[in-house]
Image 1 (cartoon, helix red, strand yellow):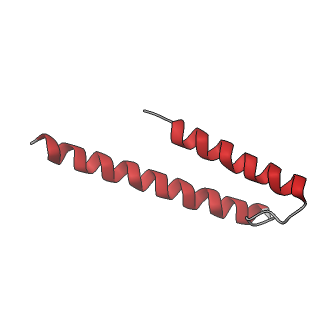
Image 2 (cartoon, one colour):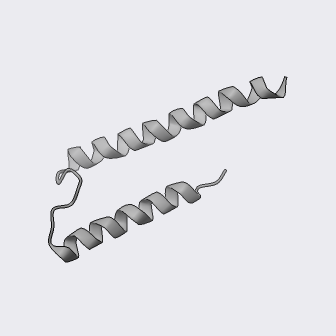
Length: 63
C-alpha cells in the first residue's frame, strides 16, 4: 500500500498552515478542535470509501 498521497497531503496542509501563520492571515480551516476533527473525519471517510470502491471493483475485473 502506498501512502505517498497521504503524506504529501499532510505535508501540504502543514506548509499552508505555517505560511498562513507567517503571513498573519486567517487559516482556511476551523480554528477549534471540533472543526479540525470534522475536517479529519471527512478526509478519512473520503479516503476509506475510495479504498473500498477500488477493492470492490478489483475482483470484478479479474473475472
